[in-house]
Structures are given as C-alpha cells and as structure tokens.
Length: 584
Image (cartoon, rainbow, N blue to C red; front, top):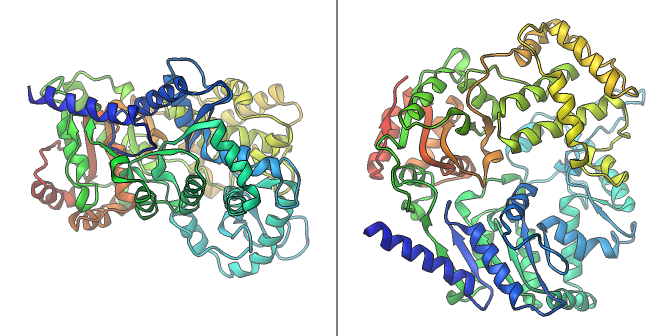
C-alpha cells in the first residue's frame, strides 16, 4: 500500500514537469524516468506549436541523443525541431553560419581537436626530438598552459618538464586551425558567448526564440561554466529554456562542470518552476541505500525506490578482496559476483563488471590488462581488439573500441595529415564515423585472436587482412614489439575463457541499466574514497562510483580491498544502509 502511494506521488511529480506552462529546472535522481518526462514535455509543446515552430532537445553525448531517438514514440524529430548535442546546437545556430572571427565561413566543430598531439620540434626536423603534448592542455585563445587541468590530463602534464616551451607552438596551431574554420569545444563556446553579448546578434537570438517554443537541455550536470553562461545568455534574451540535471552524476571533470555553476543556473528560475523527481523506478531500496553513501552529506538520503525485490537474494553486496601481486585486482571477484547473480537467477551476460578504468574491470573478470596507450602500434591494435571482444553485447563499449580501431587502420593507411585528428580527416571528406562502422566491424571480427594464435601467427593474420581490405595500407608497423614489451603484447592477445560478463568503464554505461552490476574500487583509490565518504563529502571519484552502482536494477556488488572492510561497514552502519558481505 505504501509503495502504491509513493508510486502515485512519483507520477504526479512527473506530470507536474510535463504540463508546466513555463520553462522549468528539474533535479532528477537515477531511474526517475527523466528521459520519458522530457520526451512527453517536448511532444506536448509540439502539439501547441504553430506551423513554423518546433522544440529543441539537447544533451551532451551522442549516446544520450541516440537513447532519446529510440524512445520517441511519435516518430523522429523533424524540422523545424532539433535534436542533437549541446555542441552541435551551438555550432549550427551560433557559430558556423557566421564564420570563425574572420576565418572560414561555415566553421566546423572538431570534437577530438583537443586530443591532437604536437611537439615544438616537428618530427621531420633535425632538431632534438621533444615529447608530444596534447593541444587541449593549452588555452585556445592565448596558447598558455591551462591552470584548470584535471584528472588524466593533469597527471600526464605533470610528467612533462618545461611545458612553457610548447606555448608558442600551441598558440600558432590554435590560430591556424581557427583560420581554417576548425574549432575545438572551447573555441566554439568563446565565439558563441562573444556573439550572444553583441547587441547586433539580438535579431538572430530573436529568430531562435521564434523557431523554438522551448529548448530542453538534458544532463545539464555535464555543463561547464561556459555552457551555463550560454544558457543564461539565451534565457536573458527571452529564449524559453528548460533544464534537467542530477549533480550527483556529474562525472566529466575535464569539462570543469559541477554543482556551483548548476546551482547558479537553478537560482535564476522562480521556486514555482523548480521541480524534483526523487522516486527511483529502476532499483530496489537496498541498491539505493548503498549508492546514497556516495553522495555529499546534505543529499545523502536514499532515493525512494519503487521496485520490489524479485527474489529475496536481490539487493546490495560488498565483495572484499585480497589484492594480488603489485596491488592488482583479482579475478576471483567474478566468481563471487557470478554466485550472487546465480542466486537471483540473473544471466551473467546481461550484468557487467565495471570500473573507472577498464583494466581494473578486466582483472576483476579474470582477463589480462591491456595497454591502449603503448608506443608500439601492434600493442595498441591488440588492446583495442581486446576491448572490443570483452565488451560482450554492450554496444556502446564496442562502438568506442571500433572508433579506436578505425583510427589505427587510418594510421596504417597513412591518410591522416600531419597534426590531423581522425575527426578532422572525416570532416575534410564530409564523412562520419558511422559510415565506417560496418566495415570496421567486419575487419575486427576477422582479426580477433584465436585460441591457438601465437603473437607471430596473429600478426601474420592481421597483415593478410590489411592487404585484402586496405591495399593502400603499409604493414611496416605490424611488427613484434621489442623484447621488454612482448609480454604486454601477449597479454592483450590472450584468449581467456572470455569472461561471461561484459566489461566496461563506468563512463561508458552512464544512462543505462542492467539487472546486475559489479563496481570495482582498486587498492590505489580505496583510502581516499573512504576518507571522503566518511567525512560526508564527495568529489568526482565518488560520483563515478554512484553512477556505476545506480545502473543496477536487482543486484549490485561493490568490490574493494578487504583491508577496508571494517571501515566501510562502519560508514554504512552509521548511514543505516543494509548490505551483505560476500566473501571470496
């Protein structure tokens, strides 16, 4: 009876968002049905639109847009409406038609431009060779080393000496790219904001307001401060904008987004237009309880779960493990997780093992680690193929691996220009990555390692496949790595009793749901995580774990070093969280 009352409250809250006449800002917990709500709101707005008016739905990844497309029961979004990423919207309506500040008309957004690597001394020059740095580490306007680097970028940049010597070259490259009309994410935002601040641009903004009855921004927790500024500038000029977000799922630190900027945006809406969806239609209460400790203190209450237990064995579990040599995550985790799934009669193939880094998930599943960043081409290719194979039926992780394989094939073909990314090449030819997916799928299936493959026989098979499928490609890079890297190569090629579980990073499963999920915390992270959740504060590492745990519908397991078990149990007890310990 109580559950039915809560379900009715949830439906009323959803309906309140759908029928609100004025633009709204919505805080939605995991599993709250926000995608369905935003689609219903958009369709309701469309019914009230004039003949030349539509709605715009924006999100921050192509995967999220694909999910929305799949759920549109009334058919695809058509002109004059718009469905796409926030970046594509900015480019299409605020940047491209007006050029890149004196650069080429029809400016293009190159999503991977920040990943372009360069050296102050070109490889073709005879000067002393310098390490390759990422262009995205340097400000797109001044070329100066950015002070707000974070995560992997910060760690990589810290390994360089004298990055100041790279700044003049970075400034020159950014300027050249801009003159060619090739823009990175940051440049597009700078131009959009500059134009929105120009009164002469008001007529363009007015036309946007006339065309779109409302712009709905989904996953707004992924907005960085500049994105928020774009939203605020459009709203200030009269464009109707609704926003849906969950700050607990802000896991893209490289975008420099987060709660402060989002709160500033929320505060611009009247209280009557601020809505909350706090009922979880996906997970059971045990899962919601465990996930809640990975929220910041003030928001630590568990979401109201609307899912009953399918079996008494459904729920949240801790899997304490003994690290292997060198602090490695052990493969015994998979056995423990498999036993939990078996007890609840859940298929292994539908329940991924996930971690912040792919290799920790691979180790937990009993697979060998891989090195996709190796300098040896053969190791990078073998690692990408291994990622593809380990993804199982998880299409998003497979698509990510296919993208890496595509870039490597293009490298073999020698078609990328100097200081040119994969996306620049495709854009230059007016092509998309999707157009290559079928042939890359076929090529990858051809070169998947076989049980009886040696390193030498696999390379021979790859060379044959390359010669057949890509006669213009050179096979010179397809060679055995140096002796010290051979073991790493063989690890990537090993064909284990391929894990019955899909393997993925947590970022790749964001926005999805599975009957069971195992989230792995490596030994290197556990002390910091416990310090944070014990103090009631949560940063990106904790939010990543929160996202991972809340993908589970029936069973979730949290695997971490056994040395932290008592401290973890104490934190969960204080939070009145009900979990069971599954020992390996």
